[in-house]
Image 1 (cartoon, rainbow, N blue to C red):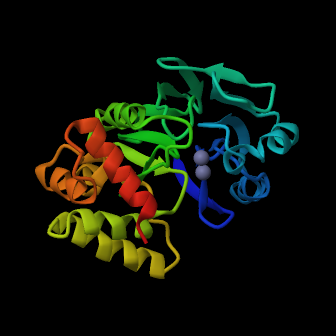
Image 2: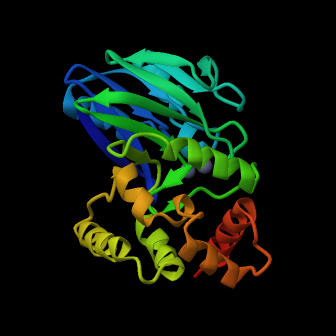
Amino acid sequence: MKLIPLPAFSDNYIWLLHDGQQALAVDPGAAEPVLEALQHCKVQLEAILVTHHHPDHTAGIDALRQATGAKVFGPAREAMPEPLTRVSQGDKLQSLGLRFEVIEVPGHTAGHIAYYCAEVDGAPLLFCGDTLFSAGCGRLFEGSPAQMLASLDRLAALPDGTRVCCAHEYTLSNLKFAAAVEPTNQALADYTANAHALRSRQQPTLPSTLFLERQINPFLRSRQVAVIQAAQGFDASANDEVSVFAALRQWKNQFQ
Ligand SMILES: [Zn+2]
Ligand SMILES: [Zn+2]
């Protein structure tokens, strides 16, 4: 299997997974990069997986469906370009001979979902849209901090080796914030050097892994003492896990 992040717009990735014959695409905000990649790799688009309703994840669906006849899967509770198969928590779908499980992860949007496959060439794979980013998490446009924390907990419960396929290249700016939260985190410093090197060569920092994210992502580390203390430095009233998480998210929103 080949896993390819196709750059789109200024910082989106449309993930393409293919086996040399059939392909699936995740969150096609534009059709052209996918059509070009299908032609280049000489593969047919079998399925489109969609995580949430934002146009930078959905605007290419209609053109791709028309051009390829691909089957579209998307969240049960969001406005989506029809026709599609709507899926929700625990649903399973098959594509490329792989079985993907749907995990509901509300917060960034109210009906956001993620797709998890327990084994692709020896390691699990997660398409998490705008919920979990490397060293960060999505903005809370429609959900509450409590919802987002529960959603991230659901993702963080997946195995260490899970490859995390996020929908945006936000890693460097997230790392700046993460360093402000945990200035003495050595794993974070190491990863930051690595991420800068990748970006200076115009290479993606993704996929990440859950093992790495657990060590460096402040939004997966909101119960660590150092992170709690840093969040309380921003908002002294943050005194339980949800208010600490909310303070972190609020701090990030204002962070330059
Ligand atoms: Zn979004
Ligand atoms: Zn997005």
